[in-house]
View 1 (spheres, rainbow, N blue to C red):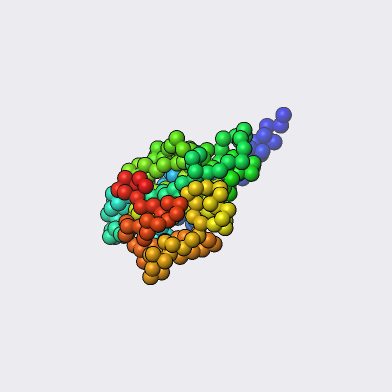
View 2 (view 1 turned 90 degrees about the vertical axis):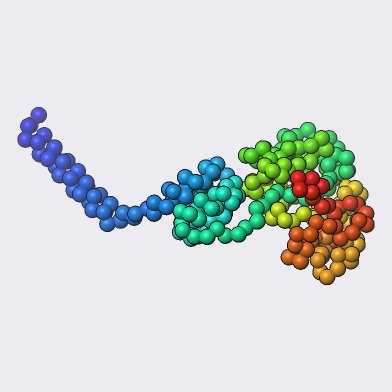
Length: 272
């Protein structure tokens, strides 16, 4: 093999490598963006569970947006007030007042209350049973009872009771909202901890039919609306709702006359 050809080839390759290396060095210098050191500092005080409850892809992504001013310093539901205070010290700002969120189950239609249409032999998953016509329960709005929400909770803040309904453990719930995200029937809502009264039903069918499929269904009779008065409650698609902007943190029910006991007031432990 010709030695000159080898040397020329090596020199050519080396020259090309040098050109590319020089170009990359120049590009790195020109395009380099200094990362705000506070991003890493904020990330270090976060819980690190990457649950997504803040609305971002993970803790680092949340930290980036907090430092940039795109996210609230109290936006981490897992860390709560303590983490918000740590972030405030890093950024040199004041903690924003915010009420923690809790998961609230908006259905009382368990095995003892809900009418059934037959035996379900499919995959025991709420999502899977949805594609199978809603499994065995006749109500098309209520809890399916397979516990996808419990499986989604990373903090052991939920369990399924003997009546095949999910129960929230108030002290453990961090308000991340993962349980609500996976529920195909949307019977889990995230509420400020100050909300203590609820219409625990999602059924929007006509009252006559809803009464047939569940003994704890709202039938849209309007008794609670009239008793509450002053626009503190309203009907929407035959379903009663609290107007929390007016009801605020009251724990008393507007009436005890609800025929299906749909109105519920929670105690400090979150129990009906």
